[in-house]
Amino acid sequence: MAPFVVFPNGVQIELVFTLGGEIVSNRLWFWTDDYPPGSAELLGLADGVYSWYTSLILPSLSSELVLATVVAKDWSTPTTPFEVTTLPAIAGGVAEPSHSANVAISVGFRWPLDYGRLKRNKNYVPGIPYSAIDLNTPTMAIQNTLFLGYADLIDAARLFTPSFYWYWVVASQWLDGAVRSEQFFKKCIGPLPRARLVLGQRRRRLPIS
Image (cartoon, rainbow, N blue to C red; front, side, top):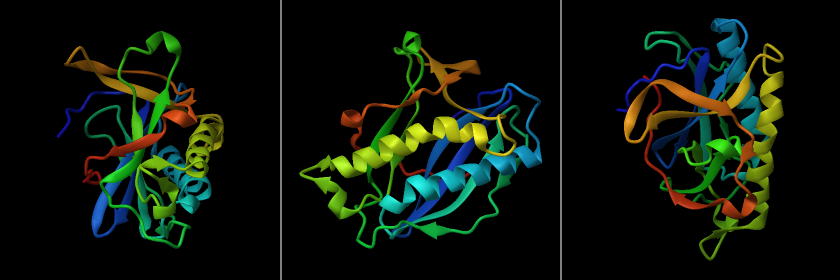
């Protein structure tokens, strides 16, 4: 298990899916420069990410993929609370088979160019419909969906409950092979360009216990 690296006023979001009997997940980081988040703020963030994903990303993914839940965990200390979205599980919107859980489209995230040499976060998007891959390359349609959907998260995060409280950020826990004492982060400026959204193999990730 990865070490816990403190992130004051930072929150990890975990989107937890089921696909072909497997549990897979993706993680996003958010931060506030306002008062520390409590239960209401964590729930507002979990519900906001659920609404963003089910509106802009999930409709273009296979119906075999199910978004089971979204978990928001305060990363200020190892024992701080978490909240789980109150909204129901929902399947992808494309009625065709999915590529295996190990096949995903890699969506890298950008932060200000002066930090370009540091390792950045990414999501490996699961549930890719068969028709969205052409000769081992994501189609232009799925590239556009993922690029525009993730780009929308920059502004969408500012409107999650409470309004103008959350920022989507890119976080780093490691430096030169060593664990940082505190996470380094910068505001996300969006996904990598469409042409760099490529197929990748994802690690199997389990939900937060």
